[in-house]
Length: 316
Image (cartoon, rainbow, N blue to C red; front, top):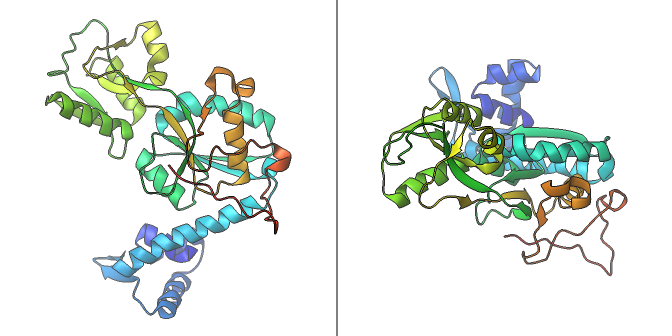
């Protein structure tokens, strides 16, 4: 399955073989073996390369989930304080929210292997659904995904621009993040509500948008966490726009069966005694209640007892 996923990712037997350090014949044979077992064609020629068939796309989605679950299972049977934690985060939260939490968590649990990926919100939640990451910090997850919000931290979206300029939201250029960004979607929805069509410029990354706003290229909707220092120093000003500021809290999200290390991190991030005013607020309103408070000693994967069935976690 892993060989097939690499082939699918590259749309090339040759590039997949190079990444896996195997021969092209071996990679091709691996895919052919799976096709024979399934009785379905998974790849087809497309120009000079290959492309997934519809069956191949369906199978690839299952492979991602199965391999993700296997890695999650390996982590689940290790003691939490010596396990692995894969965190996915949007750029703004990664720079201004998560790093503060990671410092104290790493000091507290130095033997946990940390992995960090920074992607747009939509991609992060897809990875979480496929068990390719353990915990995501971003905006609210999509409905009907089976993902569970474990904790929340207040945050607001404000419009900012360079000082000393006229910032008419109807005519000033709006600086936007790239597709897949929750902030971009919210900015476009705001413009629709205001029924205005100002010029817009997509710059992609959070850093590029912020730098452009400082230079006076336009205005942008952004989390207040990201511009707190700029506003205090006077390099940016908050622009009053109807409908803002917008309450858009950060969410700490897991699957319904979080790994021990993810449970440990959630317990850490909601503890004001450990993280001070950076603490998230635990969620207590999903069907089965909040994630139980745990210690490192109790965060290993629990074994079900005959008189104590496994606890199933609900979703929001």
